[in-house]
Length: 197
Image 1 (tube, helix red, strand yellow):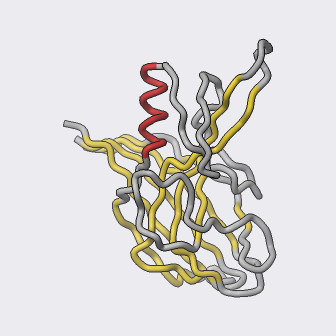
Image 2: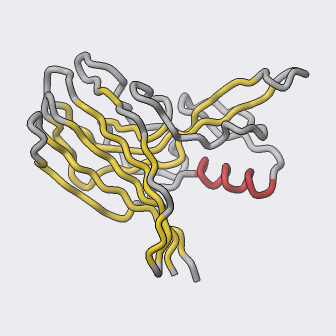
């Protein structure tokens, strides 16, 4: 029997690139929205996942659904981080306290969200999603949570290109150990999704 697994790792570096903390563990963090999306893409129909504001929305078929490929400076999708340590619940729809994009107090700069190609290494097959987030805020920031936001769309009106775009939280984890990221340092969060015999 093949069992899907999600793992995350965290690496914190100081301003000189020296690793000051490392953690890797199995995640138990798939949220309700993740399974709603998987079901939708398998069977179609209609679902109304909550977006990151907590409001319900509607999902239609579109090429941009389930995208997580955020560019530099975009904290609306892909791997995101936050400062809250409220335990994960299946009904979570956002980070408890997401760290905003930027260079001001309490903000961090999100680099490009990257994806590793699927790797087959019997008895497992998986791929990784990774992001480096840099602290140039002028002070230390303690990161306590991470997650993955994905995009979806809803078509309205008779014209095919009329779309609303929304963002939902499919994954959220609270770190075993809070991560202190010093000014000038960075945190790298990596998620690995794999299937194992």
